Image (cartoon, rainbow, N blue to C red; front, side, top):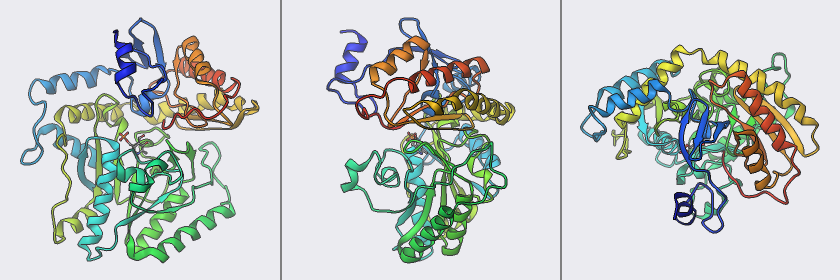
Length: 442
Ligand SMILES: Cc1ncc(COP(=O)(O)O)c(C=O)c1O
């Protein structure tokens, strides 16, 4: 049995069945913006391997940092030990996080960093003598990960409905519908729906204040459940309500952070800063898993002064030195690379390439923000047709739900962005398939 045959019958892939699973390709290497297949073919990674490969695959600086770290310390438990890569990374994160956010908890994945953020909100309220405050407010259309607590904060009618029975019930406000378009915003008058949304949020929190610990959202870009770009004004409204009720405001920057939407942090377009922020994905440039939950000193102080004092979380691989070394190299690249300008260029090119697709009958809408271009279709084409376009164009796309999208590495050159836009256009122009073919997430 060759590798692909064994894989097909024994290895689960994300959101896939083992009975007649969708085909997978055998990756043998990767370089720059391309994935190299075992048969030598190359595919442009137009989804940055689920949005994390910001600087390109196998970036020499990141690979060399991991190699160097291997020579001294691959892992040590973080209970009772610390190490230089973790301390350096905490300092780096504190220096780029909003002012006053300088307490860092390292987590092994984005989902775990969200769980940690929620635990911080709950321990904050407990330390303030409010043990009944154990729920969060989240946004419909959101996505925060696949672990239990993160699922419970994601769109209640989205991809996790199957697990409703075991999930804690949080409170949800409507999906933000005042769309954000960086090309035209100044002078916009808020639609009536925005004032209604603010009222809905206030009413909800007024009615349930005694049980709410905090609020969480993906700032400006609701990614894996909705591909929705929304106005930063919503973040200011959330900040105002959190301040009025002493709630912990969590911004999940896992998808939107590190310049994906333009600025380093998506939320920096608003006046509002969070109390707790989750980062992941591009933190290591997509080379090894690592995330972090960054808290303000104010929140950390309250937690630390509470009856328990200790913050109650501690994964085995917390602050893995190899991952921290990769992240330090990645952050060094971000600090020297003028990524805001790179992303502004990609945004213009995606806009130019995708805008004409709005005229295709199966297309419901086209939107672009930063290095993310989304074509919303009535129904996705058949999987086999999409695969054919991928093979013919040499551009790897992973449409899901009713979205054909591109989120290329932030270092993708102009000619390659054009190739990507052409491939998206070809997929969008395919005949719609019989029904949603069950792809979820990213
Ligand atoms: C906004 C957001 N939060 C959390 C997560 C979960 O991160 P991970 O897949 O690393 O657990 C994702 C993943 O797509 C995400 O987009």
